[in-house]
Length: 190
Image 1 (cartoon, rainbow, N blue to C red):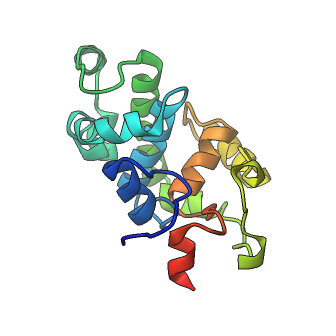
Image 2 (cartoon, helix red, strand yellow):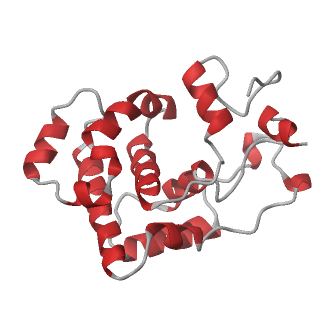
């Protein structure tokens, strides 16, 4: 996609623009893909999303492609290895949360459930195009659905998934579409 007007975000950086145009708000399914998105949203907390995007290839490498089974087996030695890897965001709490979240996904599997089914069960009804936000001030940081999702994820053993992180993941994974009304992604759909 080659938008001709200003994006919601991402103008001025090719990586950021491609993320906006091709990924943000597009439905994401599969436990591995969802684990990655929730982990990266957790790592982003307090930082620029562009920082995370630039480090995403390294994150994928060091977290074994975010395969829940593989990451669930990480040990204290793996935590130490990750804390020493300057290619990623080196935050012990976020690293340990990613490992705990992978273990929570495995526990879901053992209960014949999936992260995909759990997350998507909290998807709100799609808004009417006429209700699309016009400015970022109209885009919430949380929603009732993100609060409920965060609560359920925590109940299931997930960490670093408060309502704001859950809402950001819901945006990134297409559960909600917060592209602004004048965004070229929206205009291309018309």
